Each structure stands twice: as structure tokens, then as C-alpha cells.
Length: 292
Image (cartoon, rainbow, N blue to C red; front, side, top):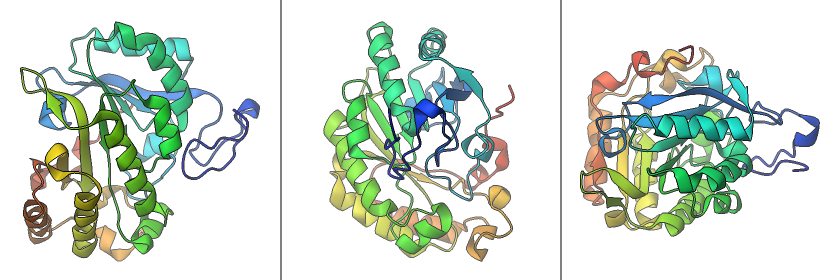
């Protein structure tokens, strides 16, 4: 495409000239890891793991990202569309519960072509695992190809989104993306073993010192999508290990038990069901090893 407009940054990088975009990648597809992953939500990981393909680069670029090595430094292996398709099929053949495509926004057009070719051979759902910072026009390329959307809804405040991700339009963009995701896949559905087959699971990472923002995110989500038809994953895994010393002071500590419990109470008050995390999740040890 001439002048990449896949993500909300719309930076116009000229892919045909291998120009590097704001996502830190150019014309080629780079993947950083393709393997079963056992630390997603229970009906996604199950007992055999989720078949995750981590894509290098990222169009959002949070300053506290635990996958900074691949999201900002774009560390990974260059693959063709044909090779990506074979990797996905080989991963599916290991017995994983789903094919989990992580941070692929900036490759959406190419991933869509791959899925169109391999989808008839897949016997498992396809998961689109993203920051939530997506253009509805780009998401429409995935209609009929993705079964489960697993987006973040990170921020309500434009100031917080600016400070953490240089994306003051995050809330408005994410709300439009969530609506498009839900339009495509509808209410959550499970198979006979309790594994997720279809639907939307929205993740929210509770940040230290941001109780009001979390409450506003949850209230906005409840107004945007039918609470009874989606799942909420309320995450406690924020760790300052990955935040630079220049980050705002509130990012230099972990979330307190009180802060997380207040977020949980708000979610319950709004009628959400889904998943929670214990305080042991706030550890760098849960970051995948991208060198294996």
C-alpha cells in the first residue's frame, strides 16, 4: 500500500520503499515468538495453551510495556506471508486451543491475506490480541477471519493516554474499535469444554494511582457494549520494572491491594463478569522469553 494508514497514527509510511513507520517496522513481517502460551485467561489458555504468534513492532508504544524488546526494538524474524501461514498451521497442529495473534495491527492487511488462505484448514478459533488502539476500517479487513477479540481498554483520560502512550485520542479510538469488534463477533460463546469459541474479552490494566481513570474506563465500557455479552479481564500485572526512570512518579510503584480491590468493586457494581489476577502477577517473570 502507498502511505500506510492501517493504525490510528496514520503516519503514511511508504511500505513499498521499506520506510519505517511509527510502529518501528517497514515493509516486511517480523515475528518474535510462535509457541503455546499458558498465561492467558483460562478459557483461552485452557490445558493445552494458546497458540500465540507475537508480532514485532507496535503502533501504540506504552512507556511501561513489558514486551518493549519486541514492540519498540522490533526484535524478530522476518517471514513471508507464505511462511507466516505455515507457522500458524504448524502451531495449530500442536494441539493448542486457538491461534492467538498478538499486536498485529500494523500488519493487518497482510495477516488478513494469510488468514483467508489458511482459515479453511484451521479447526480452532482465531484470537486478535491487541492494544485496542485500532481503526474500525482496518478491523473490517478481519471480518469473518477472527473469532475472538482480546483488546485492551487502557485509558479514559486524554492526559494519561498522552503521558503513557502519546495517544491523547486513545479513549475515542478504542470505543469505536470495541464497537466494531463486537459487531463482528457478537456475544461470547463457549464449546462443550468451557473453552471460548467466539466473542470479545476486554482487558483493563489497573495502573497505580489511577483509580478514577479505571472507574471511568469501566463506566465507558459498560455504556459501549452490553455487559452481559462480553467478558472483562481486570489485570493487576503492572510492574515498574519496565518503566523508564523518566516516567511519571505514579508509574514507579506497583498497584496496591486497595487500588485493585476498588477497581474490582466497580466492575462488580457495573455487572461485569470475567477474570481477575492476584498480586503475584505483578512480576517481570511473567514476560515471555523472546530468545527461545
